[in-house]
Figure 1: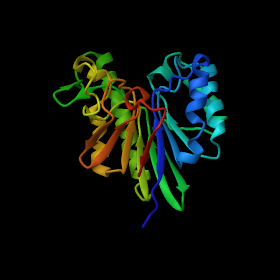
Figure 2: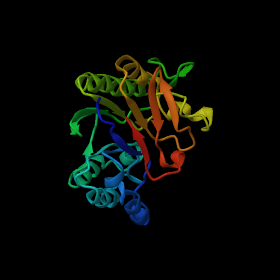
Figure 3: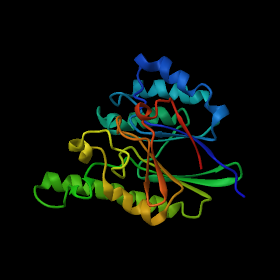
Figure 4: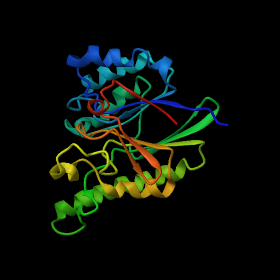
Length: 239
């Protein structure tokens, strides 16, 4: 029987110098509690590299515990997301952008398919590939995210444990508590297609600060790990 992997997952940390003490404290004992850290986007407050440096300093404390992240909308705000990635990378954080990673943890292969995701809504209220060019570009951007997730899941299909890491939600079930009028901006049900087809062991996302902590796509558990939702610095999930 394969060993259990302890995943410490959190989204929407919104790191900045102002929040250094909180960020540092949240990572303090992770090396004792987890085998893998997943960060579900909105790593910074406004996407500045000096804000990423605060998070990078905290991540150095848990080395050699692997830390894997995706970006969120806040991390793109300043147009310096490449600098954010470089700053975190210098601290050993692997930031996945429409990509995947395979790790060996406790003698087993753990695959992570990671991408930011994007907007679009959910069945019954979805943005369509129709109309003005700008609106169709939004649809196409989500398509690129869905295609990347599909490829990532294909790439890790042979791993003992398969995880998906997103920022935007792939289902509406973890959004309840947010005003329904903004659900289209919190995720896209199109992301659920590859998840339902490949059936990974768990999915983690953030972004929905007032949503629910748990949902499912078929039998696949989906965790909204925005720290505002979990009420914890990190949710510890065994897979």
